[in-house]
Image (cartoon, rainbow, N blue to C red; front, side, top):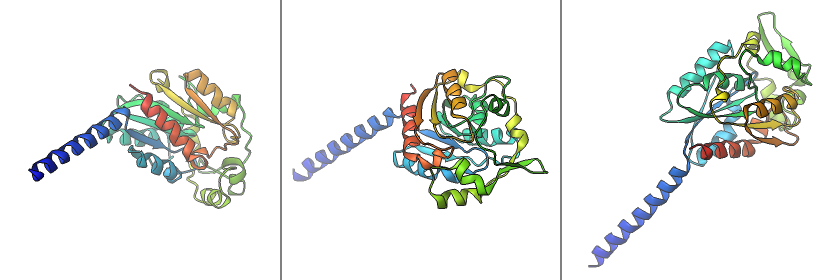
Length: 254
C-alpha cells in the first residue's frame, strides 16, 4: 500500500512539473532568436546577450556574416533562419539592421528587433540615410581595396564609449573590415512593413545619429526604448537591457 501511494505521489509531482513546464513554454510564443552583428565586428560581442537568453530557455543562434557584400551577408542570415525549427525573431545591430530588413521576409521570421540599427525603406540605403542625418564620428578609414575599418585609435571613443576600456581595445583591434559597397546597397521590400518590430535607441551613439534611429523606429511603428548614455556598442555594453527587449518581443507575438 505504501508503494502504491508513493507511486501516486510521484505521478502527481510529475504532472505538476509537466503542467508548469508547459505553461512556461506556452508563454514563449517565439523561442528561437537569431542575433545578427553589424559592420566592423563579429558575433562574439553578442555573448552576454546569448548567455542571458539561453539561461531563460531560448534557443539562440549567432550569425557570422562575412561582410564581403550585402548579398553575402543576407545569404548568411537566411542560412541561419533555415536551420530554425520554428518561428524566430531576427535581432540586428547597426548595419545588421539593414540585413534583417531584407532577410526578415522569410516566412519563419515572426518579428524584428533593431539595436541601434539601420532600417531602410524601399529604395533607400543606409549610406544615403546617414547623409541626411550626419553621424558624429570621423574615424572611418576607406581601404584601397574597397574595404573599410574604423581607426583603432578612435574606436573606443566613437564606437564603444560606454564599454570597458579593455573590451573596447580588443574590439578595436579585432575588427572585421567591411565592403564599402555594403553600405550603399539599396533595400527592396523592407520586412518591417509587414512584421512587428522593436527598437533600441542609443542616445549617445556616434556611429548612427540617434535622431536617425528615432526616425527609423517611428516610421516602422516599433515599440521603442532608449538607453541614456548608450554608445553604438549597446549590444555589448547593455546586454541586460537588450535581452530584456528581445524577451518582451518574443512574448508579445501571438
